[in-house]
Amino acid sequence: MPSDLAILSGAGALPPDLANAYPDALCITFTGIAHSLTGRTEDHSFDRLGSLFTTLKERGISRVVLAGSMHRPALNPENFDAFMLRIAPQLVAAFKLGDDGLLRFVIKMFETQGFTVCGAHELLPELTATAGIVSQVAPLPEHLEDIDRGLALLGLLSEADIGQSSVFENGLCLGVETLQGTDALLGFVAQTPPHLRRGHRGVLVKAPKTGQDLRVDMPAIGPDTIRAVQVAGLAGLAIAAGRVLVLEPDQTRALVSEFGLFFVAREI
Image 1 (tube, helix red, strand yellow):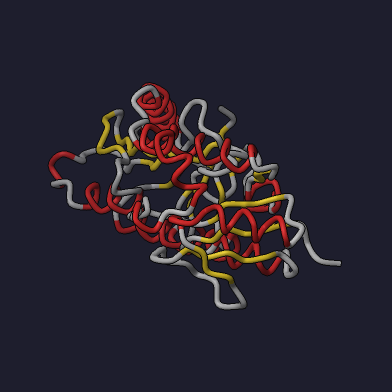
Image 2 (cartoon, rainbow, N blue to C red):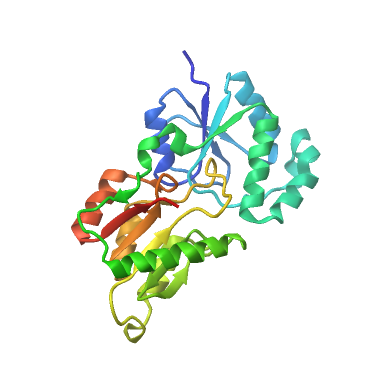
């Protein structure tokens, strides 16, 4: 029996994991957008979303999941189909609302067409961490204080739709995630002069923004994150329990152990 699920793929480890777990799902990629799927896929254009919706309906799709990283597409109005011409004014307005506003518009667009938008964490619940210490190494009391400060700052930054990560060390903020992403943040921290980092090693804190729709924009960490935490000279990381994806979980946890880091999932 054909699947009623379509995987709309970007780059990263998540789309292949979903495709492996749901082998009968329809896998969709987009022209000009990097993706990580190697099996059978269908390519579509953001300029002709009406054609995409027609295909999904003809294939009996009722659920869609947006997975992997995607940059904002370069749209060409000359190639728009009738559907895109009709929604163009709303789309232009949504582009001005920041990432959260644009993603809310995308969700509404799919729902208006009769599709249920699923979160990857709903389809692969094992990719999130339950509250507690995930690692063999436990954080020190001073690390817990840094985690509290990091979460508090992320709560404030949510109002401005800025980032999902912060780094705190000795009660001081060494950086926050911006458009460039978590790896760029950790690279910046790694370059911090030693005289500014006296005391205990710090912590990466990652959590979704307040009100963020986790179905299409759930924060994630993976092996590359752990390597970057190590290079940045941090003692460990803390994530929001059940609200951050842990990609390639076996390898991620193995690297945490190999580097002697702590890894905590916090209820927030």
